[in-house]
Amino acid sequence: MSYEEILTRYEPVIGLETHVELGTATKMFCGCKTDFGAEPNTQVCPVCLALPGALPVMNRAAIEATIRIGLALNCDIAEWCRMARKNYFYPDMPKNFQTSQYDEPLCVDGYVDVEVDGVTHRIGIERVHIEEDTGKTLHVGGATGRIHGATESLVDYNRAGIPLVEIVTKPVPGLGGLAPEIAKAYVAELRDIIRSLGVSDVRMEQGSMRCDVNTSLNRPGEEWGTRTETKNVNSLRSVERAVRSEIIRQSGILDGGGKIHQETRHFHEDRGDTSPGRSKETATDYRYFPEPDLVPIAPDTAWVASLKAALPEKPSTRRARLREEWGISELDMQSVANAGAVEIIEETIAAGASPAGARKWWMGELARRANELNVELAAVGATPAQVAALQKLVDEGKLNDKLARTVLEGVVAGEGDPAEVMAARGLEVVNDTGALTAAVDEAIAANPDIAAKIRDGKIAAAGALVGAVMKTTRGQADAKTVRELLLERLGVS
Image (cartoon, rainbow, N blue to C red; front, side, top):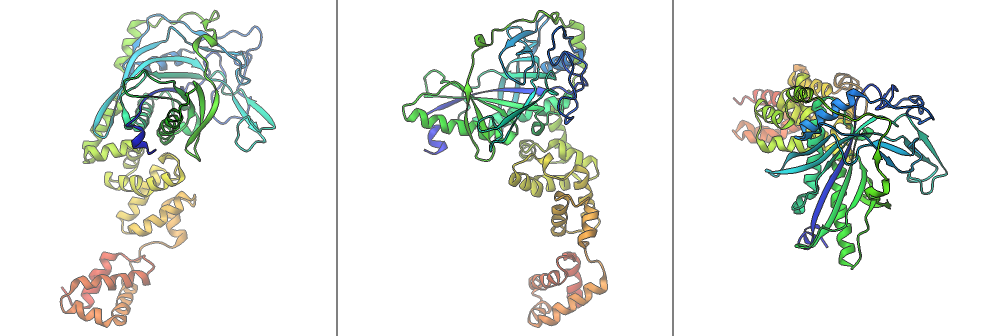
């Protein structure tokens, strides 16, 4: 059954739980550093390793960042709340419980507006709470990198205790076939909001922002179905694909008379589908109770008001401003936003490119390459400064678009900046008048019939001779200059 046919029989309901690692200098409850990529188990101490007698101390910067996120998501900020212990066993959780929040979150009842196909959809935010991250387990010896089939498992506790904000939406029904696109748009908007606050780098490819995607199906008019939770989806494109694949998978089970089991699932980037993880616990399984080693959180109302007053420009407002500055349509800006390219294009313009030039490369050649490699634009292999430098070479007449695309290939391949690639590959536009005149004369001599037509006034025939010259110069001549020189040599004004 096609995706469109499925939607005539079932209605999807989605919900998203997004975890964001805060960019604080130290961990949530101790003074250990939070540098990404450090040698395993070098950023640990008795507190984050849960050694006996070690007591936690709250990180004020993490609390402030969480409140700012809540305010930016239009949430109410609790005047009093507590941390809680979430009890479960994982080898990458040294304490065998996670210090989190349960029934008393710091931020509640917010919303995010996202636009898809010209329609604004409001996604309700149920809660934003603060907790600590777990360590990281590496399964070695298997083909999949998961525990099944592995010969050994290694644990790195550097990440254990890093401040982690969890943002939980309310269930979102009524989206129909747009559910996958709206899920992607929500995560993109959320990422832009958090990045604008400067509280996290929200780099999904490094795990500082990761999304759990909940999906269920029900027949029209019936109660919502049993949901599954696809864990740790780490790119915008994968969020969309995860929702779509679960809609297709669940519909097949329901059509066959089967039942959906509440469980976690893993998304496979290579195949675009999910596989079972573990049965999904309920809140009672975690045996939450108030954390006895930490005092309650009671943000001063004046402090919260000052944080709200100092919030930066909203990404949606910023996009509207940039749209005016760049002179593009709402549809074009929506395409830029959907591609996650607003910031990278803005940085390219700041590096010296024109708005049209920056958009041309990022939304054209580089977007195509990102899709082929299944990566975000930022990971495609070119920087805003390099793209601006490439466009400058085009503007200066040192490269034409065809040569620039070849130079960009070298940049993406790691051969250096555009000027270095151009020099190393010998790709600069030929501006030697003598060399161009010789090439034009050679083309005229080799094609007398076409030359005669041009002399007789059939100027359109000049394209064939221009092509011949471009071939002779390996595409390194400026086509406009060649045409002008050609007409001049044939005595055509």
